Image 1: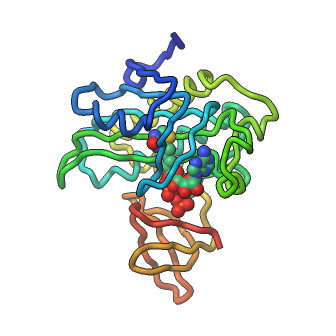
Image 2: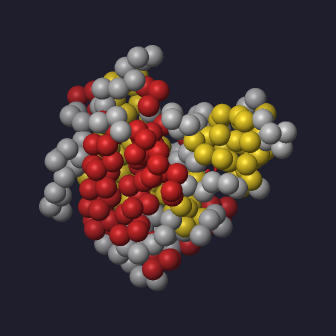
Length: 251
Ligand code: ATP
Ligand code: BTN
């Protein structure tokens, strides 16, 4: 056993050598599980990001999902993605690596994606039944483990450090940081989360937002209290971009 010291998150850990997707598994069991249960796998055969886009998950990565049941209004959900990103950035910091957050759900090192976060769940207009917070972190991944088109935009801890690090060590630190931020979230100290998030986020840069209703170009100024991105266009108009199926590109 890996000996976690956390009290809620990771109280129960379900481990698979190989699974289709830890998020899919977690969603299937979430209604009957206590909050804090973590699903982790060495390999995912059908790992995914938003809108079923593929998340390539060979051996060497940390592929995990955490079941959460906060008794809060669903409007706060984006901040769960934010605490995931914060926990990852702090974990990387603990291993001497500087990382940045790309709104809404990516963690980058030197502009390349090292981690993707995906929150999925079941909720009504007023209540959250559960949220599955999926985190995919490229720990000991080699460039040639990933397909050509993804290789160019991605990076791993092994590449940065020039050596492998035990995935369990990364997992332990990550769960600890996540437990800390989830406690802050449950105490509804949202400004603490947003303030820290802004410190780590890539802001002040020109961005292009791609969404179904059309594209928007402007400067990413920050986020509002619900985590929507505030973009100032060339005409000086401020637009709020809500987390959903939108893609952000740095111009
Ligand atoms: P977008 O790039 O459109 O903003 P996104 O970054 O939020 O989207 P998703 O749309 O959820 O991500 O899809 C995941 C994307 O992550 C895939 O399109 C793929 O390019 C990339 N990807 C897949 N596997 C890995 C991996 N192991 N490491 C880094 N990037 C990956
Ligand atoms: C993204 O980049 O937008 C999100 C990627 C999320 C990947 C993780 S890996 C663990 C969990 N299981 C999945 O199928 N997806 C998430």
